Image 1 (cartoon, one colour):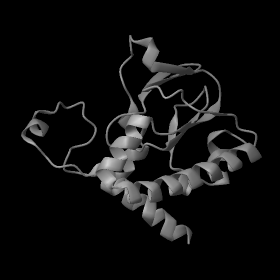
Image 2: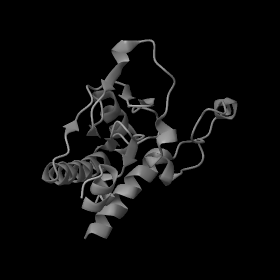
Image 3: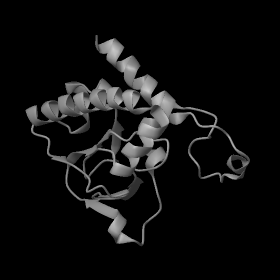
Length: 177
């Protein structure tokens, strides 16, 4: 059953990531992390796919400066876009699955005492570490609307798929025995 659910989630992400190439796509800069005609599932969970430059508009930035797991949920605009691109029935199937896995992840993290945080529907998260800072664009096109990011002040943030989350992954990242 878990394999079937993972396949369904992957199919939803695959259909979200595929776009029709246009002439303007060929003008994209080298800073783009994905091409319009290619889909890279692994890029959905790479920190590099989310990194953004420092933002001067602080109204779009939420600061995280404590060890936690951050749950990413879609904005109203993302929900409407997903309904249009996926169709309402497919959207609700994917949303139900995503919410199920987010719920399972919340329970798992609570069981080992990891604090959780929800973004304030902002576009950017700025993680303040003990040695480095990272600004992530969590609303970037072609990235999942539902997601989970681990953060510990002495480590780089880690984007983690909730569909494959295990107790061992949590313990390893957060140095829990």
